[in-house]
Image (cartoon, helix red, strand yellow):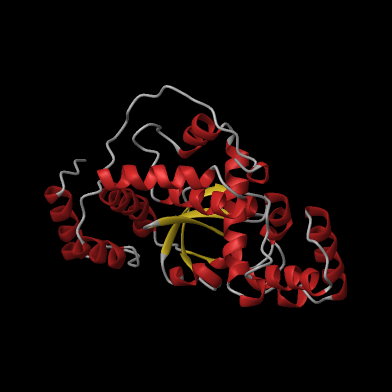
Length: 278
């Protein structure tokens, strides 16, 4: 296994918690092999394992899975997930294809910036012919901020996530860029708070955002209903039996801030069809 990935494997005996389909078993094995390889493959595979909840047959939570399968704690696992998001943002620029981060420390300082800001900082290092390190990325970010080159792209000052919301609060997503822009207009539930960023659960993934990407939903009924809808959609997606029509319906429901009686009926029909009990 590559040392740059920062992952060390360990063995653990676990209790089976939920069956994976044969296809999911194969996919999980392939992703775990990728986690054992180089950094970029590792972080992308780890993100897929979490978003698809392929750990559920052996572990109750993603954090327990990371500790048991790869031997690192919650903080380290999410550092790598955040690094995967940075790499995805940088990959949006063709000129960076052959000069992407090779370790998590190169990405760590960039996680506090918007995607376009990340590309400016990384691009400045590449243009100067410097070999990016965690320290050089940090120094370049500070230098460009002092010159106003990065700061002028900030739509708002940095907002401490802990001052903005609490875990479980619900929002609409706005102004997302890069690979996450497809979620603009979707609702989301806050699941983990960092210093200036937070992770939110959407209907089919967990993504990293800033407070300025969130528009609070104030209606009490909607705030109460959305976490329940998220849980119902996630349970259906995890059953591993859905056909393409069911996925289409769930994707549509994942963009509604509330369910009409007919939409709720559709969801109940699918739960009955696939044996998802309350």
